[in-house]
Image (cartoon, rainbow, N blue to C red; front, side, top):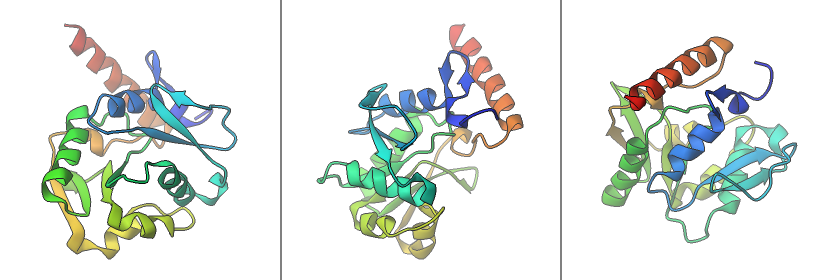
Length: 186
């Protein structure tokens, strides 16, 4: 795609900026963004704390560890969002957080029309296990091992399923973003 997909432009903002704006407008106490060590970004980005993953060649599990290592030690839970999912709504993020605050169930997963998506919330009970993941393995490995700890939250948001993995995905995302901007301008 000619570079990192998170840095592709959706109108005037990058995919990553759109994701960070959404999380920043949510009820999340703090937003962190994990970058590979090759990144020159330091400090904060759109209000999010920048965390450098010095082990990024080891896959997504290393980003999970870097993020967990940078959160507040008193955090009750962590909500993992993906930087290539720019259409998740603030309402969905808030619903996931509120669902955890009410249920205290260990893993909260949004569901749209019967399909699970992202972001996914993990309670503190799972931090150690998430930290032991290795390679290009994400939270799904922990989810599969703990079906009894899952709380599914139905959301009216197909953005939990839409990600950008190919050039065609990106072209669809640009069209969707432009359409949403036209609708909001009316």
